[in-house]
Amino acid sequence: MTTPTTTRFPTTAPVADDEGQRHFDRVIAEDSRIEPTDWMPDGYRRTLTRQISQHAHSEIIGMQPEANWITRAPSLKRKAILMAKVQDEAGHGLYLYSAAETLGTNRDELVDQLLTGRAKYSSIFNYPARTWADIGAIGWLVDGAAICNQVPLCRCSYGPYARAMIRVCKEESFHQRQGWEILYSLSHGTAAQKQMAQEAINRFYGPALQMFGPPDEDSPNSQQSMSWNIKRFSNDELRQRFVDMIVPQAEALGLHFEDPDLKWNEERGHYDFGELDWTEFKAAIRGSGPCNVQRLQRRRQAFDDGAWVREAAAAYAEKTASRSTPERGLHVA
Ligand code: FAQ
Image (cartoon, rainbow, N blue to C red):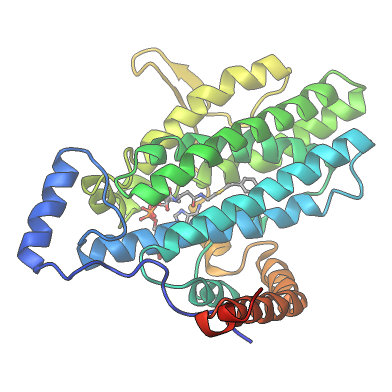
C-alpha cells in the first residue's frame, strides 16, 4: 500500500524561465524568501530537496540512539523527559519532510531513498549510546551542534525550510539543556559518575565536530548554497563557532576535551583545535560506521511495522472523501 503520490504544492501558472530567473535573482539579492509556487532554478530545487530530506532522515534516525535508553533512564522523570525529546525529533522529521515535499518530491520517494540506502543522514547517528552519560553528551554536544548549524537556517532563502527551523531550534535548545543537566548531575556526583560523563564526552567530541560537514576545501556544495542564501556560513565557520561555545561550557561542567591541540589563540580570538578524523567521517557516511547497518535495519523494520497504520489512514481518507461527495451530501438530513 502506498500513500497518495500527488504533490500538495502544484506550481501556479507557468512562468517563462528568463522572467522566473529575474524574479529569483531579485529575491535572493534582496535577501528575501522563495516560496513553493515561485519559479526556481533546478539546481536550487535539487540542493534544497537533498539538504532538507537528509535533515529529515537525520531527525528520524536520530531517534534510535536515544529511544534505546527510554526504558533504562535512571528515574521516572528522566524517562518522561527523554520520551518527550524523542517525540520532538519525530516531529522535526515530519516538519522537514513536509518542507521537502513543497519542492515537488513526495514523501514516499524521500522515505524510499532512505530505506534503500540512497540518501544520507547525519554521520553522528551511526555511533552507539553506550551509557546513560552518552544521552547527556548527545543532548549537550549533538543538539548543541545541531542548534549552531540550524539557527542560521532560520534565515535560509527557502521559506518553508526557514519557518520550520524556527520551531525546531526552540525545541533543540531545550534538548541541549536537558543534556547539559544530565552531565552536570553526573559530573557533580560520585567519582564513577564523573568518569562516566568524561568518557561520554571523549566519545562524542570528534563526531559532534564532524556533524558540520567536511572542511570547506572539501565541501562541494557550500559555495553554491551560500550564494543562494541557503547556507549562511561555511562548515568550518560554524565548527569554529561551536568549539568556541563548548570549551567554557565544559569547564563549567568540570570536564574537559581530550584534544591536545585545543587551546585559546589570542591572535585569532578563537580556540585552535586538532585535526578531525576525516577517514572515520567518510566511513560513517558511506555505510561502514559502527551502527549504520543496525540503524537502517531498525528503520526498515519500523516502516514495515507501520504498514497497518498507513493502510488504515488511507482507508479512512477514502471513506471520508466518498462521504463528502455532493451526490451523497444531498441525502444527508
Ligand atoms: N553527515 O558539500 P557538503 C540533529 C554530506 S539533525 C552525513 O559540505 P552541505 C537533530 C553532504 O550531505 C543533524 N553526511 O554538504 C538531532 C554532502 O553529500 P551529497 C542533521 C554529511 O549539504 C539531535 C557531502 O557530505 N542536520 O542533529 C555530513 O553543503 C539529537 C558533502 O558535504 C542537518 O542536516 C554529515 N555530518 O553541508 C536529532 C542540518 N556533512 O548529498 C536527534 C542541515 C556533510 O552532496 C538527536 N544540513 N555530509 O553527496 C546542513 O546544514 C548541511 O547539509 C551540512 C552539509 C552542513 C550537514
